[in-house]
Image (cartoon, rainbow, N blue to C red; front, side, top):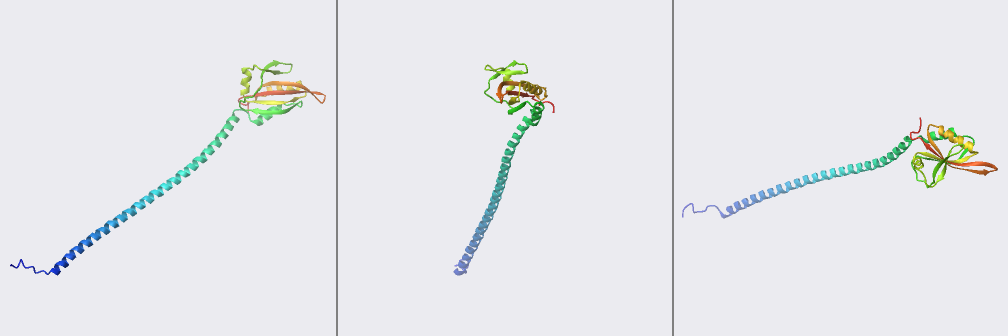
Length: 221
């Protein structure tokens, strides 16, 4: 047996060396595990922060959208209101103002005339009325009732006009009122739809129904 074949290292020492190697490998593995776990935790924290930032951004975007929708709804309501006002302004621009028509009628009135009903019609209205056919009288052109109707009557009923019903002391007072209306620049035509004489308190009273066609432009300002 040679010196090389003789093992001079004690078995206990060999066992200690083996345990040291195993312990070093265990420590190295433990450190690797810690690094992996720590890195994974940091990565998860990063992902969580990113998700929170995205959620916060989405919530902020949702708040902006909700605010914009509220503004949109308010604008829609305001648009409807402005549309109504614009429609009123368009109607007012299409003819004379009511105050001016009051003045026109006031300039035409005489003490022998009083009204029982007065309606200003800006747009065409369908009314179940008999169509008038005009006849000439001593005072003015009066419309009598004609079931057949006429295109002319249909045309003026679609125009802006006033329906005036009232009473007069006599036909002369009514004729004077009609002539003064026709003399006003704001008035295009006057249709005497109906007249009737009645006795009231021993005096003859003339009941009348007029259609006063207003100029489209309203006449001079």
